[in-house]
Image (cartoon, rainbow, N blue to C red; front, top):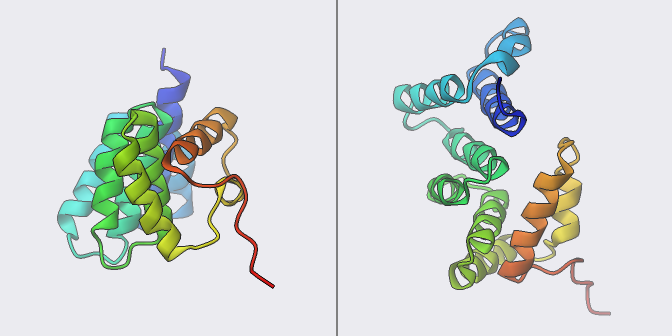
Length: 163
């Protein structure tokens, strides 16, 4: 019997693989049946076949989320770092990096990632993270993500503009 948390991470990876590979809609309905290894294999293959793909940052970033969801914060850090090294990286990869490092207890590096995040998205907060995970029905994932952000120094609410 599969571990429910592991299935969630595999499903997340599989959905990314299907969406980024532009597979037909019918393929997405079978994505949740893939194991974690099968899903990661699809993403490894996509990365290998298209190493300069404009979605490479997203490949790595969502893999970071998947490992984060499984409590594998060290691996989540590795994939978040890979995402942040891409030229078209979004601020969200820095949020994932900061949260993962925060939960690993590496406050110094978490705060550095948070500083980069806030440079790219000055009003980012725990509230922003909660809003952006509207699609996630795993409250534990969101709570752990927000806790990692707290350790990294991200505020609960965004800063208000000066009058």
